[in-house]
Image (cartoon, rainbow over all chains, first blue to last red; front, side, top):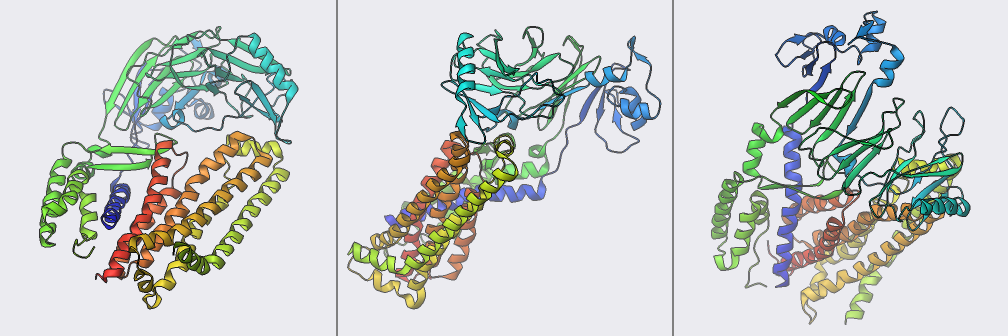
Length: 414
Length: 220
């Protein structure tokens, strides 16, 4: 009995290992680097421009199929390419009735890209609290990091001990503002490479969102009064000289909100069917328009909006991803499932199963028949070999490899 | 008889075990020295920033040590048994062969568990000198699969050595390598995956019985 379970474990080990490595090596050979097209919205012709080709002559196309060279693209996207146009002395004086001033262009050019792995991120829950009004040009790293558990605690880096006075001061202040400990989520932009500091947005245990920062050594804490039923999955804070919004909130159902500087009023972006586990979110803005894209492995959905986030145009395109390529079709017949422990859409290792669907049944049945023949050859009766057959029926090629390589236990010898 | 068997096994592996303890201590000391040097030259807040905000992996020197320990202990314990087929004597003792084999590897398993537990505690202590609990927890959870792989590498190496036929060894080796590689290639592991992998490492002790079965019966 023990020897039989030993063999059984051996079979399962081979299935486990092959279901990870065989598809991995298969795709190392056959996976193509399929790049999503880049979609722009030209403020000159008020039209989308789609960049797929890499050649300079056919640099991009508009939705009607007209091709543009790189020089044409740059003049159609003058705000994105203002530095090149200034160099060539081609920057227009005005656009949409507004004067084009370089400083204004620069401040208004914004980009924001959020990957699924950013949302499903593992992070050590300690953060530096910057002095947001130090009177210095550059931000400086503080000497301590904070945590928000039963209270707000600052831990001094050099001595690795809690700074009591500062901790007490912040905790008392947060209590006075009705912050309910502990924090569920803390989002900030902990880098000194930014123009100024807006501190942190912190979700308390009752799902109220607070804005916390430090001004001249004193705590600053405001309840943003953002509705506590949003079901927030992710927040990103980014200080931008434009000062239009503090950052972005992404909810589990896939709604995206910007937290505006206008008393934390939320701006809901007009997006639909955003799958936060698979889609890349990209927002590119200039002086006149915002271009917002959701990019999956085989589709891009882009909207262009005005500065008030009203949709002015839409663009959608689909293409064949690796799963739909001929290598993918072949794989779906051979592999009933593939197992990945590390997935590009998550920063956590876990079981990431990918089931092939109905087409893999053919492969599974063929391998089960082969196993039956193999067992006949080994003179193993169905009564003794049923487990091998069931294993191959469920795991297809992986189970077959296991049964092929590992001989059966002979009852007479056990 | 169990205690006599354990003593015999202990005599075989004690020097290898002490050398492995020594190697482990040297590695941990090296990590501690490195940390003290980073703390001086990056300054404490620079070191914290690198670790907390950028995920600087200052403790990875320990990564392959448990794997190595498992392999070495299995080799010194089981390769003498295969010379001149000495294992046959043990298996002819008036006791169940499966039980005997499991008792033999239980000693290695216990010693490895104690040593790896010690590694975890020392890591905890030295990381705790410079960092708060959040970072200690991160370091321990990141290095936990590296400790578990030591147990799996011990069991699998034992099974590979006891397997009498080279052809079957050559089949077992690549799958064993693939299995061990899994433990070393994961990061930020979800609880369900790490629970599964701990379970799988312990159950991999059963593999030795299949090799033992081939050995005793002389199955070619």
